Length: 188
Image (cartoon, rainbow, N blue to C red; front, side):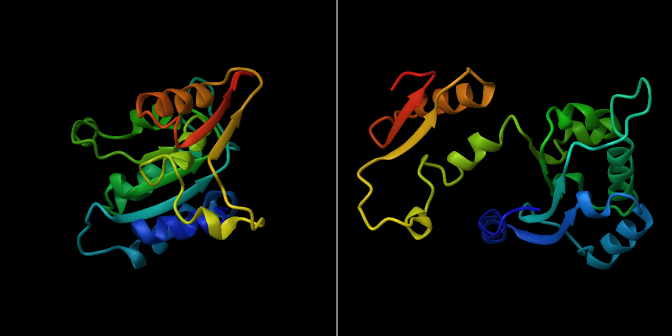
């Protein structure tokens, strides 16, 4: 389940057609198909999105690069003629896009008509830069202190991780060190 803040941000940026929580409803794809048919739009714009929340609890058949759950989801969206590019997936595993690409017809891949995947490799990075300049808008409304913020900060200490590297490189490339104090790899 997405938290309220993320849900509000998504609904502000996109026309969210459906919220689908696979943690709750991943077993009955006929019900999902009926739900998609009820909510299906006559035409889709780039802002019409189906938001799917997924946990890495899928069943994989031996030798198969994708899970049975994602096989059924992609098949259900294709059967209902809903564009795969209208899907945003929040996934707590990794490499989901690589797993589902074999399920997406080549002509759709060529048109970049694939789901947007936000997984555990990109989640921190996406959150930190989501409003484009590295500083989350309306940050003050989530604060509990009345002391003014003189500089936003990110702590990425401890062992090097890919998401920390991505975020550090983004801050460096966009010259945001004057706006964000960063502790990275045990160095401030």
